[in-house]
Image (cartoon, rainbow, N blue to C red):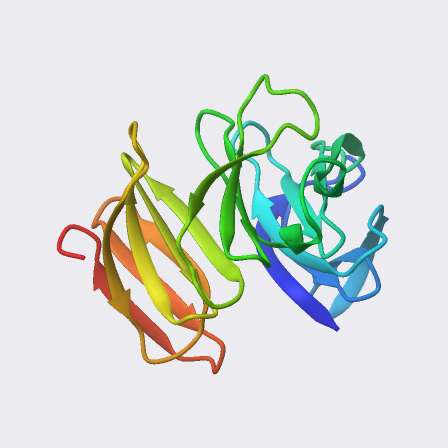
Length: 208
């Protein structure tokens, strides 16, 4: 069963770039799909692969699983770096959302309702808790837009945070359903929010 999905245009085994659907699976594997056919599989996780995100520094991705392990994959899809959050954090750090920013900062949404930050240059396993505001269940979605961070979770709350210094809570919207995904169109500043039942809604990030 696929628990996370990511669409990417990449090259496999030095072949020309193609569009693939990358799927994080319940068995810990990561599959590359092309037109309904699995053309490549990656192995590295022991727990279900619950989160995938594109890397901002190379044409590849980062994966996270329910055991708190995060893997940075190179552009040839070999393991470049591995982080185990359970070495320094509680069992509630099951990874359910990832976002890799332009400054190589990795935001991590967790089962415990927190957001962790791993900055470029930090040692392995040095993720810091930067936000805690989702009262009921997992932070399923995180996205950074300029000076603001947007999070969504099991509690149906879409929260806007000031990310500059204080990282303080600014505003929230109570959504009709549990949130599973958020993306931001940086040209129009429109937030696209996906819900567990397949519904999609759009919000103006400026007026949120």
